[in-house]
Length: 214
Ligand SMILES: N[C@@H](CCC(=O)N[C@@H](CS)C(=O)NCC(=O)O)C(=O)O
Image (cartoon, rainbow, N blue to C red; front, top):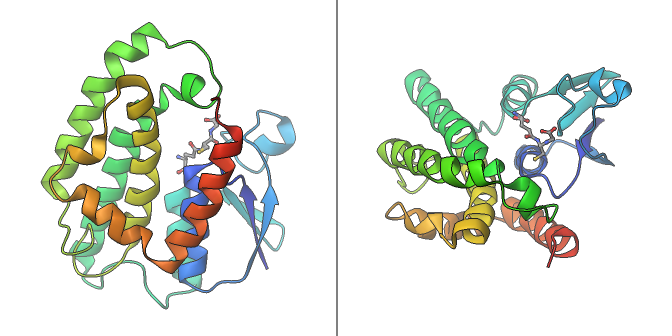
């Protein structure tokens, strides 16, 4: 059985968990914080979570895990059937990860761990996020899903990575980024109704409520 290593506080861990639930793949959760310890680096080269373990072999990086799950368990597919549309779904996922999650993540020391606001990050992260959101608004379809008429990995990425970024933007800039793109708020609310997303999001919200500094 697949073991999913990570914690419910992690938006990427939750992304892989939703993919496993959507595909109805049995899995076991193993609680693990990110770490630079050699034994963690030997299975997750950047020390990040999540990673999956299967038959003693480990794989990290959420989108690589998505592709692997798709190969070993093709049905139900979480990519569009058309090869170009499939690549477009991946393009959306990369934009969400690299240009929405990552700039917001610069404030994780403040938002997750109660550290002081980093002045450089304060100046740089907001324009970077604005640029990422503008890029996203150019490719998001909301028809009704982000890459078209089917639920895909891009929706999983969008739900958890935009939610993570919004937690940071509201705390640091008092800025609700879900209002930055027409239709984004309603789209995220629609995803929250989906049983797999609702279940995983519920566990994440509880973990965040217990963990985040007040
Ligand atoms: N590119 C990675 C990102 C995963 C990631 O950033 N995980 C966070 C938790 S949400 C982490 O482990 N952070 C610790 C670190 O960056 O050292 C993926 O796609 O899985």
